[in-house]
Image (tube, rainbow, N blue to C red):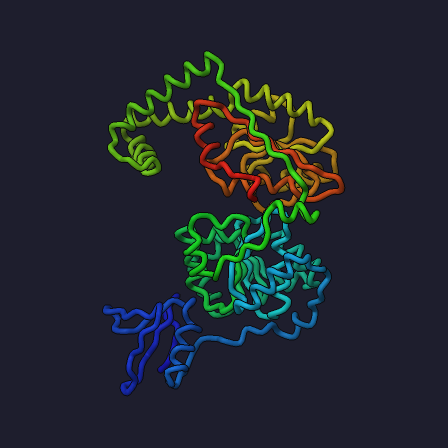
Length: 459
């Protein structure tokens, strides 16, 4: 039998005297009359064929070793903490496959770097943002002494594929990238691995031969079975509380503060929600998400649908920018005037609104990257002690000196809440981080808070 590539799939050609065997992932394509499978199943199918005594000719690359030119330059410049060693040991026992779950700030990147060093194979690192791409680049240079020129960057206008390559999820699922990467890398590291559950992103894992694959995340999310199928078993190493007790993360206090709308705000909120609910009740779809999608779809042509959609948007805006919520924010800023504070909102316009009212720099995804970096550097140096952001700091940005987090608004997502809490848990001597969640009662804001609620005593 022969195994060859055809596009982003692999094909088995059986000899006339060979019987077809059954194995997970091997499918007969009636249109072409061929047996096909996804690249991720290459080694399991090939090993099954060898076990059954088949003679195999394969066109697929299987030697993934780093060339001497890069392997000889790798030099370890770090020490692993006990739980990081434990994570690497678990991966080694599972043939370097698995999803490592550790809190934000626990140093998951170092685990991936250690796996790369031990295996010494061509490695692909998949990240959700350009900020994380640059952070991984710096870590690889600093921790392993890999020359910057030997690391490929793919995304954000760069299209380099080298023996160690960092790529964004947005670029990695594209056909032109996968065609080049399919059997080139031996190890793939999925940073913030929960992103892999997306419909397009999961194709990345399916279309790579890579026998070694690890995921790194603080929040595996609901699609655990999908991550296990694409990467390997979920390996939970330690909780927030475990790492805080050992001094690896700061101790923290979490407080939820409830406020009410003013009479005028409450009246307007009810009017707007009545307009919205009157319309969506006629759509006839029970699932809330699907119902909202249908509303958005209709709003392009139906004036009443557009009126209902705009009413919902304005109602949410009232809840998120409630007068009493901003009064609590002012009080908290006064209380923590000598500390570094990150204020989290849901939308860019809310972040800019708060920035204008309180004279606090904002950091959002739509701003110039150079300006954003300047503001974050000023925050790290202590020249700025307060920041307001709309989700861009939720993931992948390292702000070790922040000690107070104020959550004014967010998605109904436990993952986002965990990520935000993690932003202020980097350890410092004597540090006890403070996290506040300010919630407007009897509104969408209250519903979202209930949906993302977590028992922090169990973390």
